[in-house]
Length: 127
Image (cartoon, rainbow, N blue to C red; front, side, top):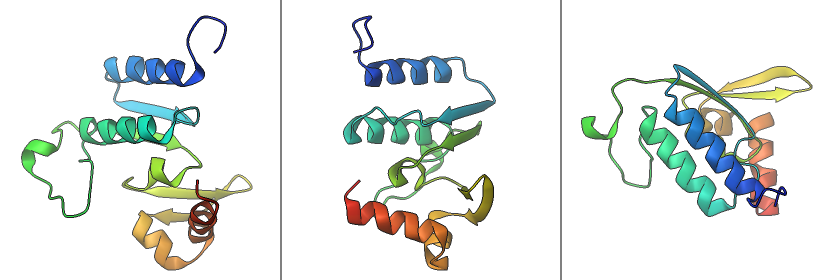
């Protein structure tokens, strides 16, 4: 707890909800889900994807016009967890402050470069 009766994870969820409620054209999250457990993070990421113009994808799902918000927004997410960025339209991988790779999850994984090794290490460590 942070001394005011709420946990860091609860605080993060409140701040995310407040930012989304304001409905800005651009939204920036810097490690916004790092204090959340995997289940809460998954729910928030899926809701953000649905709300900001990307459907929450699952195996065999299809995009329908009803599942996509007509007014797409720009959301920039800085994160270390694969689960937070996996379905992003574009992922930029940084090393020592420089962008070394860009693309979708599938594109970057197929390159077997920096992103591939980050994902591989996360999967091996079980994070």
